[in-house]
Image (cartoon, rainbow, N blue to C red):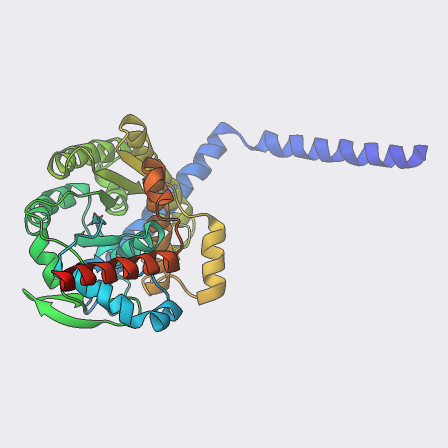
Length: 384
């Protein structure tokens, strides 16, 4: 027993002695050389990728605006009450009863444009579809993307379109009511492909001359990060973002919530050590977004999805990154979009808990109540 203790003590002494000798070799000069070498390699990799990067094409089609319609009843309930529900829908549309809905703008860079998707940009629509399902409301949305845009470029290009979205929302809803999850078809409106299925009256939506914007999602930062060697530091990014958010807020109004999601780069296929450097720098830029959220109650920072979310997505779907190794593909966009929609819904529920509690009644009971009310109205009309 004493010999065993002696052996363990000797081994511990050897390891400590060896570690100390190793630490003595790590002088400030050598450490600086290693850091400089890694920094030089990162700069070289960045320059090489920028010179050889082949941009992916924009998606061939897809909707840039629409209305995600929340469906209250499931298939079985439709089968049991198809005639009664049809009657309720006709009464509802004829009387033009407005349906409570959220108006959402998705603004940003190539993530909003959908670079990495082949057929259609999926992120804006899936964000709002997730939000509609969780809040149980219709969600009207418009995507304003600037491919390759940093915050300054986005600021310069989108504000006029935001004004049009507010002033022309009534006509836009009539021309761009988005399909239900099971049926959809495409049409052209002013040269832009839009999704549509039902007329404005069938959706139960009323025209409004000036529409309130409930939320704006701003996806930005990656292109500002690319320009860091041109002097676009995180502090410059923070000032540019502050200027943009200030002007945007003046346009959309005091009640609008602005969401600033962090941009995840952990799943990109960048070479090392460039990938580690990019992830770390993106975290510094995201910290500026987080700081802005602490200064204003109407700005909400959305942190990155947990690594576990991406791991499960890869197990379920396989590849989640596009061919350029930087942008997500359709599956990657879907995971990120559903996560953002869920985070938005959680905040809306905190701000309006009563509205969520009022929607806890069973859908079947609500349908029966609607049918009874409809029959009562018909009897009153017959008596008259």
